[in-house]
Amino acid sequence: MSERSHRAEVRPLYPVMLDLTGEPCVVIGGGRVGERKAAGLLAAGADVTVVSPRLTPRLSALAAEGRIRALLRPYAPGLAALAEARLVFAATDDAAVNKAVLAEARKLGKLANAADAPEASGFHVPAVVRRGRLTLAVATAGASPAVAAKLKRQLEAAYGEEYAPYLELLHELRGVVQQRAAGAARSADGAHGAVPAPAADGAHGAVPAPAADASHGARGAARADIFRAMLDWPLPELLRAGRLTPERRAQLVDMAAAEPTAEGMGRIARWLNSLLPDNQ
Image (cartoon, rainbow, N blue to C red; front, side):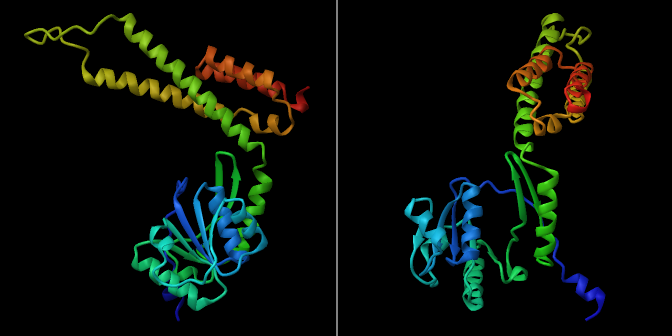
């Protein structure tokens, strides 16, 4: 096989983050692979059913706790749980069974994955690092799970646990700035009085649409500048060092609300930088 024909077999994958909260998903197989798949689905809030005559101790415990539904029987075509599932995982130690699961899922229009047959799967499961709202995923299209695992470890080291509160804080600040900016825009519009009704000859009509659009565009650009300025703040470093106390966090929010401008964000940056351990 030529290098060119080998390259043609690589299928481009479309990355997507699925909201599986409360969605039915089924794992065929109760071994260690099935346990990992079930754990990943539970972390995403899915409604998980595991089908297998035997379960690992961890899966048995999850079933006893009511966190998963366990069907203690071998896979057979026509399984209702598979027909209802949003995602299907073939995770048995029998390649023929996994192939049959994929075939049935494909026939039913389901997205299905088999760890031992990535080339036949409808989707791949990446190596994932979760930090609250932040999700980092690495995939190699089945070429090298070891490389994906290595990169995952590097991401875990580069993006520590501090990124969970960091994203929560940015989310809060974004809401504060948007709210204050919207209030300022309403005040500015009100200061110019009501928009006059168009005269019969159009000579004294309302403000032209292009002018209004330009005004909204300028406000949007200003907010974008504010959010970009926030990215320069040393918040991850302060959180990692335990320097952003609840009192300082509250002060930060108040400062952002008091002056939601690019200049205000610059003043906040100087204050935050002064709190770094090296600057104390």
